[in-house]
Length: 205
Image (tube, rainbow, N blue to C red):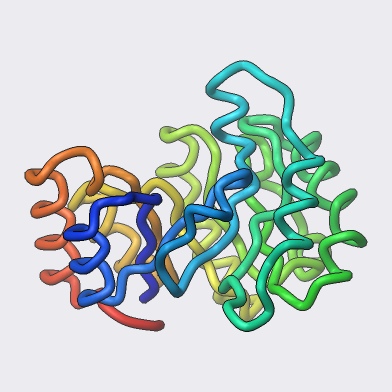
């Protein structure tokens, strides 16, 4: 399973991540802060939503075009809208032509209200990114894991920083997960690493 953390400038932390094979979540607008590989490009919609500002599609497009082919992302998360269901799906589909112009895999961020997304719609993407609000995410994650397995699509569990969630993602058979919690304190970093050790989740899927 692939494991990704947020960006950090701590040399010690970067060294530990490299030693453990932990990759990086690169959020839109922070491509210059990429320090680790493997990595994936997050569209930044969650941060925009949390800050109460519109999605910055101009910067996202610029980042996609600026990706160095010699260090490609594992995937790109298509633009979405937090907890917006059909509206979020329509936005992600709208971006597909532009994203397909680049050679990188594109994942669909599933959001609250997308429970009935059909196989045909999902198969337009290269993977499933379990987003949404936390209660909805935890409730529907088994559904997305089963759906992904049936369609042969990798499933990524977003914001998966606690030991319980790491264990949950492993049980579901997710291909990857991410969290920024390990950056908050030594205790959270230790707990995250311990959870990964116990679940044998280091390295590629």
